Structures are given as structure tokens and as C-alpha cells.
Image (cartoon, rainbow, N blue to C red; front, side, top):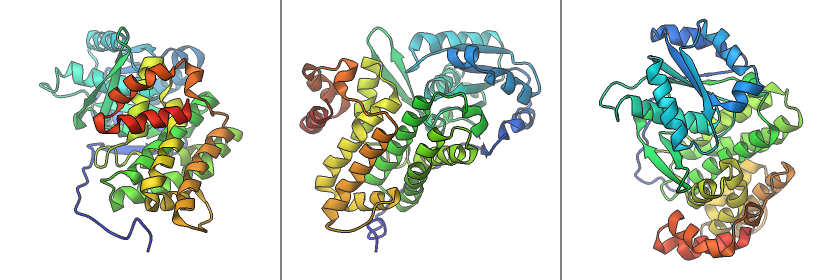
Length: 369
């Protein structure tokens, strides 16, 4: 009997109010159908500058919508700066938007969630429908949480509300082709981080385990392939499906230390969240292997590792598998590469975890410095 089947504790799973996920090559063609379904006549797009100026994605999106957009805000940047979100909110209001479309990675998607909250006046009014069109593997579209960064304080503020979740999500691999390889690969590791920490969560449960382990399997089989051959649409779609599966437990089982550290160092040192997972995940898994090796054996199996030897060795091989994947993707970095000093460790640890976790987090930071 596998470690995931050994015991089933009392638990609770909460479904997010996503109405529909449209997935497949060319599926963005259904955007017009979805807009017509909700009788949207003034859709407003929120995206980033690179997508707006260096790709044809906005034109393709407008053709798929079958109507002109009421407006486009294209100045969302990494880590969703608070000032940009305020401007996007004002632009959408001024355009009398009756729906919002986010286009891009986690920052435009999270920003749009917050715009929904702001325009609804903290949900005192009905929220505008939000359609998400992701171009990375961050899986922000499948989360009820959103973060924005105070640029002066370099600190991230988080919001959690199921009413911020997009109504419809489009997973179209063709739209991901302009995404830079490093961004696609690093956000793939971010999705791997979601899945691994779901399995390792103290609140783990069978439904989430099954989806998270399949996400790990798909990412290990398809992420490198999708980078080596970017026009391999099926590999890219498999990665998108894996990202979807990876975040199924975001609300019900939560995340762990890897995400907590990433939240702090990402905003403070302007490190992309995909890269923060490349920095932290394997070492967090090694710490877990020392205390909870049984949970890591199922992860090793999903990675395709041979299950031989003591359970502790198998557990550490799962962590090694993540390190190997990060290296093979060319994403291996150290904290020092981003200007983080050892003197910063105590403050990072205090912000990332409670007093009982400070020592452990500092030890992790030492290992990845």
C-alpha cells in the first residue's frame, strides 16, 4: 500500500467557483461564445507591456472576442505593483468595462483579481466577470489568492477571497509560444512547487494527492520537451494541464515553506516567483526528507525514479530529481546571485514563518546561499 493510501484522515475539500476551463489548441476561438453568454459588450484587457508591444497576442485576442475591446491596460509588471493596479482599476472604470480579461502570467492575472475586488468595492457590488488567458505556468488563474507589491516598502500584500477567482479560464498552448523559454520553464517549476507542497502538506488528502502527483508526472515528462521543442504543442498543453492540477489544493491544503520564502525574497529582491521556486524547492524537500520521508516516496515515483533501497534514500532522490530538473533547464541559481546577504537571513525568516520556524528557514537559506 502506498504512503498516500495508508491513512485517510477526516478532511474537507473546497471547490473554487470557476465556471469553466476551456483547454486545447486554438481554444481561444471560444472567447466570443463566452463573452456572448454573459452579454459582455465592453470587455477590458489587463496585460503587460511585453505582450502588448512585442507579440501579436492582443490582436489575436480581439479577433477571438469578435468585438473591439473597451480598453487595454498594458503596464502591469513583475510582482503586480500596487500603483499599476490602481491605474488599471481607474482605466477599467473609466471604460465602463462590463468584463475583464487578463492576458499573461501571474502578475496580470493577480492584478486583475484585485481590480475585480476594487471595482466591486470589496464585493459590496456584484463583481465583474473575469476571463483569464494565461501564457505561463504560474497557475495563478486557479487560485483564490492574489498579491500586490508596495513599491516603496518592497513588501507584498496578499488578498484571499473565492470571489476573485476567474469565471472562465482558457488554456491555449498556441498563445504560449511567444513566452520566453526561461519564463516558461521557471513557472513550470513554480507549478511543481505547488504540487510538491500539496503532497507534503500536513493537511494532505487523497483528492489533492492524486491531482498533485499527476501534475508532477506530467511536468517531469513534458517540461524539458516543451523547452527543447517549443512548437511541440502537445507537450505545452500537457504542462498547462499539469499547472491546473498542481494548484487544485491551494485553498484546501495550502502551501509550505518554499512558497513562504519565495513570497518574501521575490518582492524584496525583485526575483520572479518561478525563480524563487527554483531556489528553494529542492532544499525544502531535503529538510522534509529528514522528518517525513514516506510522503516523498510517492513524489519520487511520480518523477520516474526507481524505487529501490531505504525509504530515506528514496526521499532524498525525489529532492535530487528537482535539483536535476532545475539544472537541466538552465535555471540553477543561488541567493547571492540576487544580492541577498547572510545578514538578511534573520529578517527573511521572521517574515516567512513564525518564531518556531525561524531556525529551520535560516538553515534552508544557508544551504541555498
